[in-house]
Amino acid sequence: MQIIELIIDENEEVNGVEAISVVENPAIESDFIALKSNEIQLATIDTEKRILMGAALIPDKNIYRRVKDKEFYIFFSKETVVKASQLYLKQNNQSNATLEHESKLKDMTVVESWIVDDVKQDKSAKYGFNVPVGTWMVSMKVDNDNIWNDYVKTGKVKGFSIEGYFADKVEMTETIEKTVDELTEDESEFLIKEIIKAIEKGEL
Image 1 (tube, helix red, strand yellow):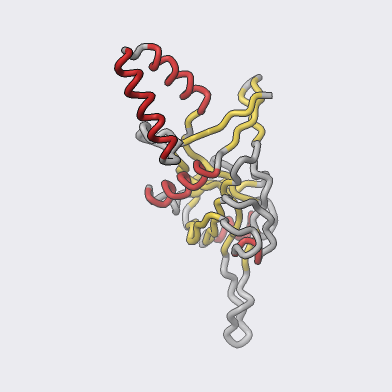
Image 2 (tube, one colour; image 1 turned 45 degrees about the vertical axis):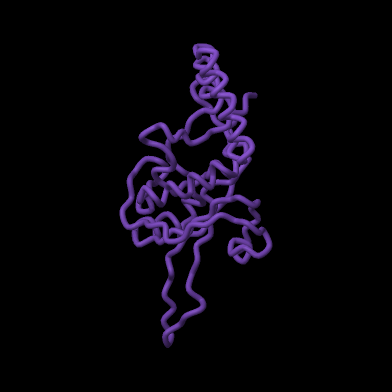
C-alpha cells in the first residue's frame, strides 16, 4: 500500500492546520484526557477545569486513508509537525474547533501548545501519555456546556483530529522534476548549486 508524506507548501496562500476537531476515533490513535481540578479547592467546592489534553499530531506515524476506491497511508515528518504547530498559532486558529469534522463549535480554545522533546520529563508523561519525541501536544479549554456534558463526560469523543491543508510530497516532487526538465543549462546549474547550499545548511 502506498505511503505518502504530507508537507506544508509555503507557496500556497492557505496552508497548515485550520482547526482541531474533537472526535470519537482519532486517526492518530491517541485519546485525550479530561483534566479536573484536584489541586485547588475552595471550601467544599471542586471546580472542573474543563481542559482536554492530547496529541494533535504524532510524527512518522502511518495514518490509514481511503478516498473512493484508493487506499493509502499518510504521515507527517517531525519538521512538518513543528511547522504546522507554529503556523496554527501564527494564523490565530486556536479558537477554531469542530465536532467530528462537521459542526463548527464555539467556546473551545487551545490554551497550550508544545512539542515533546523528552518523553520522560515532558508534561505529557505526567498525565500518562506515551508519545514519541516530536509529538505536537495541545490542551483545549472547553467552555461549551453541550460538548463538555454530552460528549466529553459521556465518552462520545475521545481524541483530537486536525483539519488543514497539506501538500502531497510525491506530487510536488513530480512537479519539480517536470519544471527542471524545462530549465536551460545555466538555470539547471544555478538550481543545483542552490540545492547543495541548502543541504549544507541542513535545510533539505
